[in-house]
Length: 448
Image (cartoon, rainbow, N blue to C red):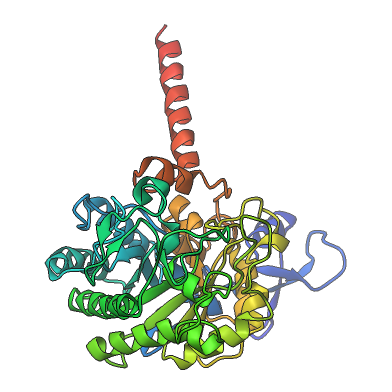
């Protein structure tokens, strides 16, 4: 055969070996001994050529890929509000696992309303501990960025921290007595009167506290912040006309309802400038209220809400939602058609800001198809990375299935809510326990 001839004679065994390796293609009918085959170019190793693994920009911050660890609450704070060793372990593992950005669960920006396991950013004394977390993530050395989510529960404060309904039990930042729950109108997601109606002075103080928390996080070495504007927490209750029934400049029209975001972004920018990225997590669908009536943020009203918020100066929209009050986590999404279930909201938007799609992202091949359509810039993952902190790296290297191993049982976050212990994959723990038990039983049998 001449040097320029790209075909060669092969034996059947050689053909099978080459075909199994994906390095040949058939060029003639019949696969008997001596069939002519063409050597195909070797396939790229892993998925480094995928767009989901290409660099992207979030404001003026460059991320090495389009994979983000979602700001899911991890229960990683000490009782005094400091960053725990467990919190550091969580986010270092996400960095080592290959994400472009890891976002902490939301931190407390004021002492009032702090969860027992909240990490806090309401005082300068927390900066050294926050810096340990930033140093740990950046110390991995693979250019992973770190952001912190900040906000307040509002009317979603758990019953064990809220006390009796209407009971004034804590001082607000402006010196007034606040009950366990606060909001724009004193109305919960059941449409019932509950909690304290915030005064204008208290709203402005909250916006100021968000600004100071952002300053502390930047001083600690964080790369960005995310405003928690979803899941029926305080900011969400201002944005939704269902829970915001004010008649002053903080309620009524869309512009008035978004005013709290515009005011806090203004305060944040005063401390950190225009180059520090500010993300906001938003409910694209408030879901039904507890009494069964539909929420008022939906596929029709969401694009206008986003346009108004982007106009307030945020750099990215992190799309989330609440299928049920307080619970944005869906189960039963093994079928690809049920995954990435807020995609239609992302595709309904047209704004000059990065779009991060959260909720139900499970299969890298499906996500690659989505990102190529040009409406989504980044993807968030919560439960899948509780199960597999190295999911991004595994997908990049082409190891294992294109789907996450997460089975969407919600046991990880259910245990966190019930016990307060840091989030873990309960299913994986039980599998390990069973494996150890079987191994011990096998050892005992062999020794009998």
